[in-house]
Amino acid sequence: MKKVFWLVVLSGLFWVGYYSYGIINAAPNSSDTLQMEKNTAMVNTSQTEKALEGTEIGDTAPDFELVSTNEEKVKLSDYRGKKVMLNFWATWCPPCREEIPAMQNFYEEKEIVILAVNLTQTEAKKQDVVDFMEMHRVTFPVLLDEASEVSNKYRIQPIPTTYMIDSQGKIRFKAYGAMTYEQMVSEFEKMK
Image (cartoon, rainbow, N blue to C red; front, top):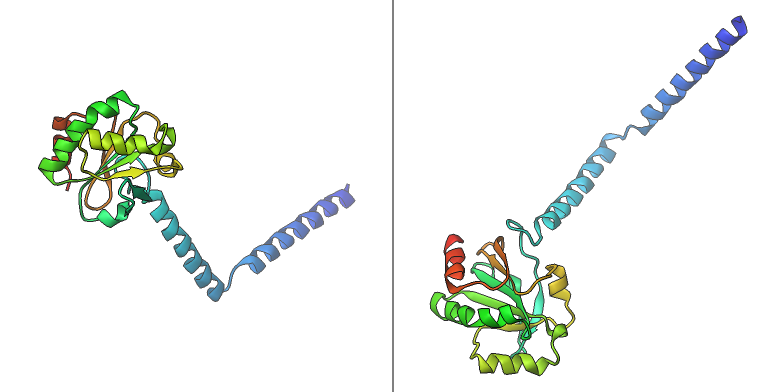
């Protein structure tokens, strides 16, 4: 019985010593600690910036660059400092077609930036977009999302989908379905 007792005591002391040795040797020295803090700060900063970007109200709208029907490159971040209406649509979509005249009036009367992102990959042909714009006398920029990169980034499901983005690049309003002129004005006036 005494042998078992001493075996348990020695075994316990061994594990306590082993555990203590591991903790002491694992403790970083001050220069390691400083480097870890710097690395952690860098990771936290980049993760915070990423976390703030998203497609929900209050998030920073994800940046993108597309080519317009006029062959011009348009980047969302180029409009920082201005209020932007970002609309996802297609020519074959009845609610989208219904919304276009209200958007054109809104664009002309309120001097807002409208970026209408066409889901070009869903169109029969790209020329349909140009023909539609001419027929409806659309003068705001229509951007061609030919590879669906932007619509995927914004997780667009129903169309039309509209985002109102304030001058700081934050999403302040999000709508599924056609908006009326009055709704556009109301949401626009709420933004900074």
